[in-house]
Amino acid sequence: MQRTNKKIKLRYGENPNQESYLEIFSSKSIFDYQISGKKISYNNIIDIDSGLKCLSEFSEPTCIIIKHTNPCGVASSKNITQAFKKSYISDSKSAFGGIVLMNRNINVNLARILIKNFFEVIVAPNFDLKAIDILKEKKRLILLKLSVSKDLIIENRSTIFGNLYQKRDLSKINKNFIRLISERKASKKEIDDLIFSIKVAKHLKSNAVVLSKNKQTIGLGHGQTNRVDALKFALKNMKNNFNFRKFVCASDGFFPFTDSINLLKRNGCATLAQPAGSINDNKVLSFALKNNISLYYIKNRLFKH
Image (cartoon, rainbow, N blue to C red; front, side, top):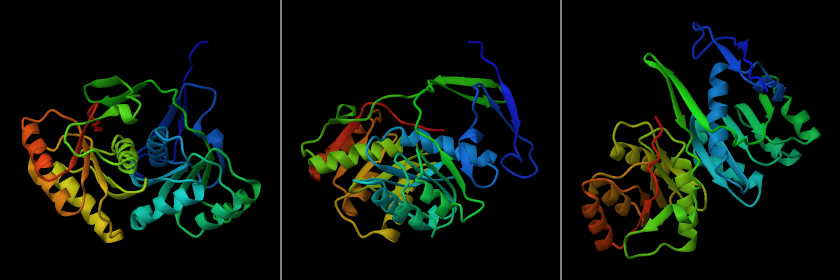
């Protein structure tokens, strides 16, 4: 089948003074999946793309709320309504005006909860007809009937030097993705939370730090120019919204010094996952051993620029 491209003009780009268009290479575009709401924007498309890629990591009922391409709240639970509630309270302030993505259908009860809040876009595999009627009360709210796709193999980005291409990181994040290197073994529940955190960290802008408990993000640090500031931001977020101890932490890159792991210990974290590769790996391990911290190495670094 011959590959053809089609250009669809958008209202504007990242800002109103920038012209933009979407180039597609298939018979359908994102607009074909829209069932309600205002015209989809350039920024909406980028945020939805980021959210769907993160959502593709999860099989159980999961909700992700995206702001400016970064998750601000992620949660998995026994049902999608509970997952949404947990993701929302992870950082309700940042969730305002966000993009909500779910991997389960939206029913009437969930629609009644969603309509009480201000969101830009809601994405789900399907909506009950009565749920659509409820959500359509907000005329500008974009509703998209979309399932997670894992078809994308190659990613590309344009630069002033030319177009960059890379193979998408499709590594399966599970128990085989982590390896215990300290003495204290984490509990099954902590391992589940650790794997959950790593899946989220993979989709945050670097430097990325994810604090979670009960498969719910409780503190996120991302886009900082050093890792200790990313951690401090995540801890500040956690303290603003929760009063948890014994949470877990995942980092997309190694902690190069013991200052971060010491900060985690002081705040009640006893389980940590990071990649190896620092010249100070032995110092970090030594600190973990002395302080009875479960330290796991992850298989690959998870930078996102």
